[in-house]
Image (cartoon, rainbow, N blue to C red; front, side, top):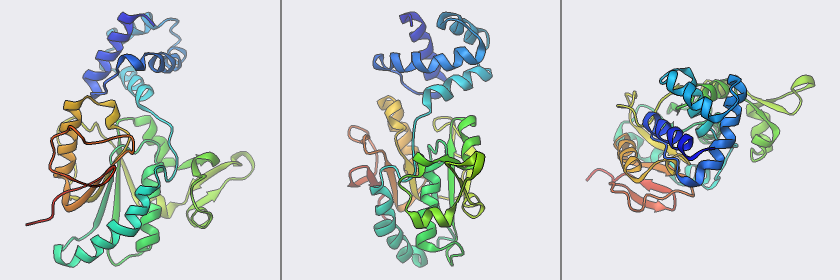
Length: 276
């Protein structure tokens, strides 16, 4: 890939998604553009850049950002977060519920990708609260990619994606495929119904939610952003937490150097201050 083509792609992606592609991402971008060249029957990256200039703001730009931002994930990735949810955060929120008069327990998976994270959250909540709880719970799941959200709503996963799901949960929450579907696992309807998926660019305008969240997962997405964008996003997320609510980020991420109002509880786990 020519430096001028990479610079064009880098600036285009940043202007529309705030994803910051540094010099070290050039090989990754080149590899992922190969899929778009095949899909569009364009023979060179330079020609593809010219095509994007002609179609700027169109459907291909969305496909480009999908290709750049989509990452491999799996159920119960960074499992320490789910242990924290089950043993510390959820019992704490239950104790506070009556005093705070929260009508519902709300969790947001802010960069939900193909659905493994929000369904892992749903399994954890189902285990803790039950499927017909006295305190209703709900999960919002958002991603910038329309294509990846379509996959998430269907809820079909290969065996390697569910490798960390305990056997009892596999039996309860998944239908194992047979015949042409052998090696696949489909999320059962009762769990699908617990998650609402919607397309959302985290850096565009205000968030479309009417209730605050007790827990927000925003993992392995801030690594794509520059420091100014990280600061903007973290403070937008913090404002959507209830007092005492938790923000969980990826284990490779840190809020060090970012001006915010949260307190680090553990590495990659931050809490909004309680009411005075």
